[in-house]
Length: 239
Image 1 (cartoon, rainbow, N blue to C red):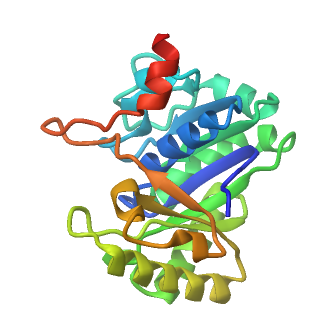
Image 2: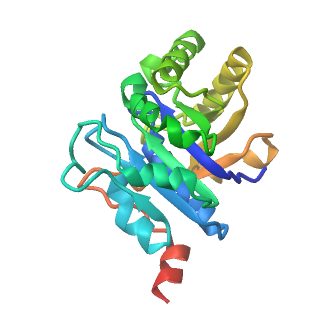
Image 3: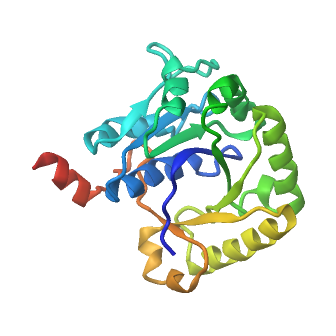
């Protein structure tokens, strides 16, 4: 099933669930379709692996990137650029809002309530069942309720991101898919997509799944690693 989102999409979840990596890859996935795409980095909690680290590459691909105000790009203060509210009101095909982790990080969304009156967002909670804090359905439901109370928005769907970093194999992906199905049933929320590393897709058969899949080409990496290239888009922008 093809993954094609429209409008304003908020990506939230537990700290360290991989939502920034998903936000970046989600933006590129839709840019490849020829859509007008923008990404806003609203993460004011996590000082590492923020989507802003990929800002230069995203902009070269024609993706608009909205960052915290100048001088606060590396700050953990809850500063939101007025451009974010403007982005929400504008009619770009897809606006991805990368929110901070946990209820504390999601709180910044509450300050955008007036803008959300113009365009109601889809709010997707990213879940990695291999993290202790989201390893059971009750824990995930508790986190979901806390995020909703903090950001004053309703979570509208789930996104699976089952992984154990380099130790991830097909079995972990399938276990994560089963877990998300149980969470979807308990929460009465749909599964928006599963995030799967590109190198694992050839060892799985996602064409048989009823849920969409977002291929992940890792971009937010430690200094000693190199982000993987998007050769098709990079060639397009350099020609």
